[in-house]
Image (cartoon, rainbow, N blue to C red):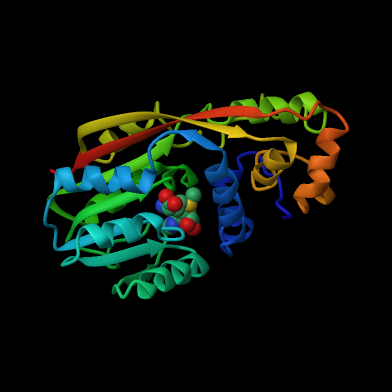
Length: 278
Ligand SMILES: C[S@@+](CC[C@H](N)C(=O)[O-])C[C@H]1O[C@@H](n2cnc3c(N)ncnc32)[C@H](O)[C@@H]1O
């Protein structure tokens, strides 16, 4: 995987549209490595769906903004069989994956290819919206949130999910300790723009009223350096030689040559905010 290395990779529009999400490959590899490592923490899509159900038992129109591969979209579609489901993402490739997954379950979905900073005229009258693990790709999440708010019906609910800025810092420590990228720990968080500690302020700036907050600790145990490398090659945070990021086996070998091959534990706080549009 050949990722370029700008200062703030998760808010680099070009990188987000190309290497990160132009195809589903990187996100699938990353999700697979993380799922196999996960030892504590509730399923995110299930948590979002449960919070949505508590906020609104019977919405007519439900939108999943920044839907990615549609994991949350599918949950919401199951939960609300009578609702119109709208999946929004700027990546046509990921929208296609979401469409295929929903169609495989015989569920209709409206696919909308759009930037969440420009939703007016594209999306309207939404009763429940989710924006999961996507707003940290915005340099101005409060602007994206205001745009989402404009698409919601008055009194409608948004469930926004994000991670702590220190997520997976133990992995940064391993990469730094290997000497392959000594700055891995000191570099800004990938989640800097919208994380556990600044997400509430962004929602308030966008005019939302916070109703509920849930913080969950997720922990991950990577069985060995090969497992860690599968995750690390998908992270644009690290500045590694491209021959290593192109091949997890090559990165694993380079790590093994420098470190003892032991299990590595990492953590992330996942925050869910339920807010309403006045
Ligand atoms: C980490 S994925 C999260 C996917 C999904 N919500 C989930 O929880 O699995 C981030 C998604 O946000 C999308 N995204 C990033 N910037 C966006 C923007 N400006 N407008 C719309 N979608 C965007 C990406 O294409 C990607 O699908």
